[in-house]
Image 1: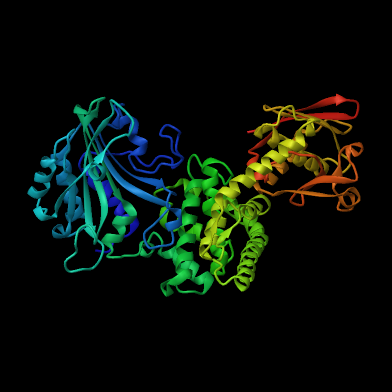
Image 2 (image 1 turned 90 degrees about the vertical axis):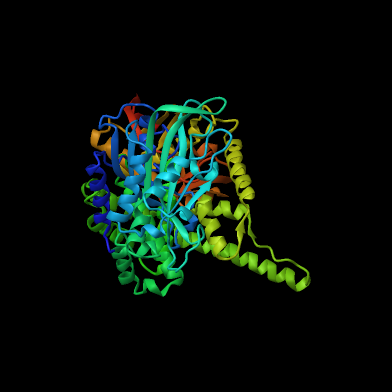
Length: 602
């Protein structure tokens, strides 16, 4: 059976709508905070309140195809079966039908609609324990529907039971998992030659302090992997061969001049670029879309995109390849199911391009620094080996070196670890953490005694505000006049106040231009680089001295890319992406010829 992704999506929805289910559509990929996770990681996750008793406005029978994002095994992406974005085909009964109907419909859709061979289907059920009985009912039902008795396996709680850990009073129960052989063998052996294609959870119990008790309103929660089902239905063993990816892979082949079927590292690179681009555009184009940043979900997005950019370089194509691949996903694969992607196409591509430009510039210099680390380690090992035949080569990149890659070149620790692993090396993560803490402590020490930069406290947020004053000072010089200079500041954990020389009130357009310029430099995630040098050298290199009388013969300097260069005692963040969103709250007169800006980081 040959089937496209669009056809599979429609067949699932049409089948369950014919059984009285309402198509409730997909919800945002971004977690709303109610379940404690950043992204929706399962089709049932958005429906948790209704499975716990809340009345759903669409009724008791529901179905959809829900997008999900999982990044816990991101390092496995590059093989034939792992993805960071995927979809789950689901249907639910909220106190309506139960095992008899659900087992019949599952067998019907798998065999009569999708054409899987009934003789090859295997299924597992709960074997029972002291708290809940063996699920003989489900086993008898599936055998009655034609599943071979020898293809029904009883497994323990850790395999065939669903519940919310650490809760009391919530629904739970056994699940019925379905498997199909992925290898083309005449006599496949379970479970080695089989892959799970979906499961039906039967929420028939309520958790109590002492165990479980029967639930009055029983629920059914079904989840079948969309990408995986498409793989089986087309008789494939490589998930990147389905029509979800085939056009994107063809584009990468055309751009690189390399065949995907040649295997090896080019094939792995194409898989990573395709998968990560798909996930990135889905997260940026989501109704609650996010952007790359250095915190929370934005950090995960940045990590995904920067990993893709690195593999673009490895494949020998421009990072712009991400945008070319994204266009294919938007127009040829997902635009119909996710129309918001088409509406936001310009925005998505613009943000992807900006992140690619930001990181690609850092990557060139950062990779040189990484190679220096590796070569230094190799030279040390070679030298030590000459003098000691029993010497065991050191295979660990030091924590301080890894921190320098992070601090100066914007390399996430995970990227350094991945690069190291490719060279048969590891990274001293404990040493990295120690170097990070040492950096923070030095920044705080520098700030003690004279409230450097007008800080009233030395908290993390105050340090961010202080760094933002550097960006603001540079932005005022660019937007208003090169003669604008800082005349004072005051920083608390709630806001920053910044005084500067200027003869008139700023216009609304000027305020917005300054705000936009500061935010653009934050989005560029520029490194904040600290150096000590003679004051004459600092002046020669055009470092700005805000208060000349405070400086001695040797000065501390901080440069933020090429945008801001100041003599300053600190403290500062490692790179601008940590600052958040800058917003000017008020611009007013402070005294004759002096203006005052109050601003916040959000």
